[in-house]
Image (cartoon, rainbow, N blue to C red; front, side):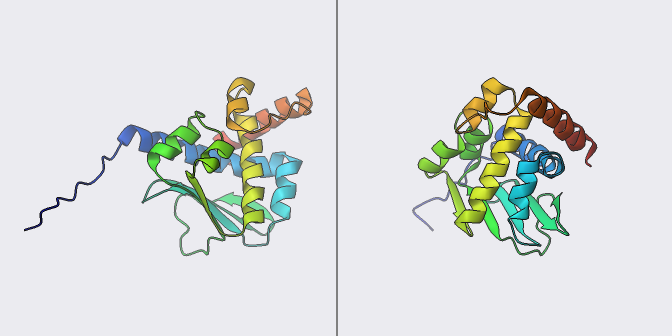
Length: 176
């Protein structure tokens, strides 16, 4: 008989569901933004062919996997399906993911508080972070996006913001 009892942590179904839905939508939005925005396309062009990255939480939390093949960016769901994942962005827990993805913390602050880890090449991870920042600017209203990204791109023209948002939302919702 053991003196110490192992108590599993709570499942936190609301937070897990929020994180899973957010990652699913963001994964589709990254795929859409790669076709709509030239900066996102340029970042992905700088990455090697058949490059794959994931963003998810420990220990077995929800994740999104995005790959580049044939010069096109594709959202691959939550399972890499035997693919080699070149860069993993790992959030330490569902609670930390909820803070980050509900815009209570920026990516920079989350990294500074050791809630976000990188497994892979740092330059490639920084490219991914830049892509995610651009996607967040397209998806979110300015007041919320300002909390999510380090610097809100005030130098973007209104046409780029509006046209990009329409293109990203349309392609994300239709899955094209």
